[in-house]
Length: 298
Image (cartoon, rainbow, N blue to C red; front, side, top):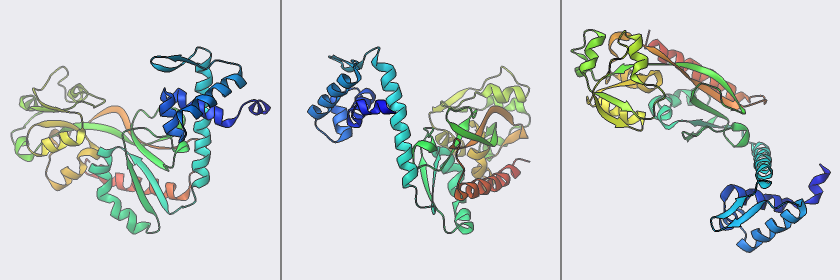
């Protein structure tokens, strides 16, 4: 790595920041220095590298053809450096940081956290509710739980639960449902961001190609569930989304027909590293809780 002696680290950091953010001003704000300082660092780094990395245009700093692979490598390199700093700063084994989608946190996880606290009183949980897939190797997140096919790059994905979908509606709305075809008369509440459609369940119910009249479309599954609880229609839900409302009797799942979507809930952890005990304990506890949820659907 003697070639690193050719260029100052501050210059490489300036190149990476400008490449990522697209302007000298944004990079200056990110680095906490003046615009002039960033400009000088970029110019000096380009001279040291012997390459013009940016073209100065009216639209801002645009990477040249020669500069694009350099910036890509710098972005990956500084991400690794950030990961090293995060790993070095992880000194408190009593705090477990979990990244989960907001709907999973609100509809399934938070109702059970008191039981985790009772079993592991020395571990404090910190929830990062986000729909973004995070790489635990590059941040302070210890473990994530995500829904998908499990084929995400640069992370370890371990299946927790194969996703199954089924209709749910209020008990009053379900009172007149005698056979699967009866559901076609009900208004549908659609999750506009779902990774599946009603056809997945229709095929399992022997109704392939059939449709329901649409009443509402939301971009959030939790809102869909609330609308179903309010008796506004029927929605296609899955185990962790509907379990609590089903257990309380606020929703019912008619017919008992469930269909697999091909997706699942996965644990997401850092690739190629040994999991700390707090992560292993959390995973074991989640599996126990999930077994209780699945018992509702037997």
